[in-house]
Length: 571
Picture 1 (tube, helix red, strand yellow):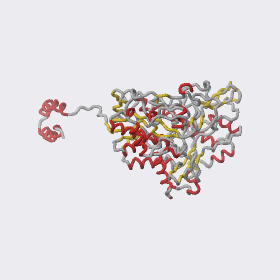
Picture 2 (picture 1 turned 45 degrees about the vertical axis):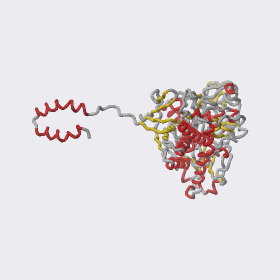
Picture 3 (picture 1 turned 60 degrees about the horizontal axis):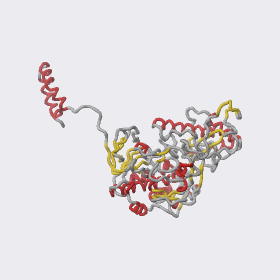
């Protein structure tokens, strides 16, 4: 209680006994005293939150990084723009891109072991018996009883594992907190980040920062150099980077001649929707084009857990005319990527020449404002919802496809706070740091020995289409779809998560890693992000303990701890 509060009752009694004139004179006398003691009304002071390590992002890497910091005895805060933890791992990507599962170690493997435990419970099988599910995985059995891992899972089950991690390790998490990307959003002293602020006005101070977002927003705000788009093959001496016209390594291209014009064969009639008039560029040249995004939908064919595909706002069936022509040419691969996950559900991914990938509509996403990104995400949602509604309802869809689609719908018990629609767009690639070491095509193909390994990858160099264009013969084609398998699992260099020290000496970047476009096609898998998140956190804590920047941390000190935590570093 201040002096004015203590005097108020006495003053009130005094004023009640005096004449109006006396009260007026007293008020004039007392006014300066009130002004002196009443604090000024103004902008409240910013909330300042401090920890040894500040993690920006809510992805799977955020959780493994935070758990590792806590296990090593330091304080940590997750500042998450997302409400839901886990990124794509909890956002529909349940048919895990494992590659060679033997190189997945540490907390990443523990994530899949916890899912195994979840599916050992009878109550986890609500819509299907375990023996009805089968055991199909991507390159490995879904349920691996020997290593007690489950590689294929439902979105809500994955999210619960991440929330369990958060609860068990008492992680401090601030959700729906967005980095202020203006010039005032980050405070640096020399090449060190001192703090950053969010749009809510909160300020986060730490010794080491870790950017685990798919976009690399904190990295960019810190002044770290990065690349967006595809490098020319000449930049790093690669073969599969840059423009790749006529290269078809998956089935995501037009296998027959399809006209892109409103009146087939008549350029004067104008282009159909979802076709670009822009020239694709020469093979091997670089551009600013980003491989396509989509939502990984969780569908159900159980009558009691199926929501019919909704007709989205602004639905125009004519935007799917290209797909109708593909069907008319005899294509029948609609359901090839309705990959089964437990309980009669799917992780439905892009497949074919015209599918869930919204080609050419994400080029500006990496650098876009929050408002523009929100619009891009909404456009992707409307495109994809319209596609599913078209498949289920349009008369141009062949009867056999139409009838099969009628058995499917959105899973009623998934993404229940978002109309059963995934809360995370699949940001396959955005910014990529240009750091201490750049992972290149040869590295990701297992043809080199990289310096100072901190984890491993093994998936194919997998890039989705970047553009849909008109060939010189007047027919439509897609470009950018690459799938090249490595010779063997490969190591990922410590330098690939480190900015150059002159740019920032207390930041680690385990998601938007330092990599060429085509090498990132393999690195960008969720198990790898969890591996690198844990390794980044280990480096952060050891740097604090040894009072050095992460760039100056002795590798022997780091590798010793990584190996003790069962990370796989080399073949």
